View: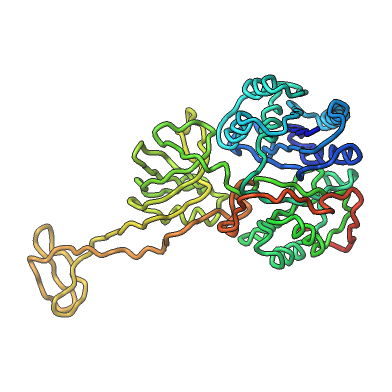
Length: 450
């Protein structure tokens, strides 16, 4: 029997991790199921304000002889984990459709860049006879259904997530920073965002008290497994699992944002013309306006975006740009703003300044003698009563091209520069033999925490 399991919202602000619970479900299924796919880690709309951390849901796809028995087993593990981690609104869903219905796929697509409701998820659950369990307001059902519906037919990446022994949760992670940099260089371009080049910050280790030790993201499962051999790790690894994911695909920015009718928390992209020069406001944030054929919108590049702020500050009225980002809700203190995630400069406008004319005798720059009185050369005293200011084109350092924030400011779904041209159009359906391990051999060493 073909089974899809979706789960979401099984963590809290300071405990737990949905992928860790998914790993535990995999462990309980090993002698009861045949996996058709890697566990799928689906990142949903990052602009949803009520999300916990990365807004990720997980789906498991496998075959089993007794779906009802498996669901009860997984439900028991699910409840115990949620109780332990003080989850607020967790959801678990099981679908036994061989082919995921188009309505479920569309729901999942909408969940990437807009706001979808628990009511909508429940409607699909009931229509297609899915089994489910939820607590609280049931918001986890949204992610659970969305994860089931996103089967990653086209572009996707992989992430190897390694987990810690429980006694180490909340302690500093001991992964040697220099080994991460070395690993990133040795595996480029098949792994990405291992460290931030602007600050040297290590990106594969989270900072919270969750069970994740490290996560390596890249194009190929075997490459991720090989990447582990480059790392110097100073604690015992509990387990690891390879996930197939929409991270690094930019999928949330695929829709077009209509500037005339921006909706709060939606994401997408648009092409327009810069209509107001950028300005820096308190906190170092950069704001500018852009218009298209439908209207005008205020755009923001915030201080944590690092080098992308420099690009935003170089924009000028008349520049043609493609911008991607999410819509921040309007409030009493702030207007509707598009939080910019990337800038693609398509056309650079000519910028002019007006200067005093040069002297016809000695070529020195002349000085005005007063309104409508012409100009006088301070070097040779030549006067020209008919002279006027001349236009001079301003040299601009900005170049046509695509610009992103540094890795530390990128969202999980942001497509890194190195992935452009490496997008996938399908998946082979084959799983590497060692895509999980619950007793990995961790090379223990004297590691210095980053």
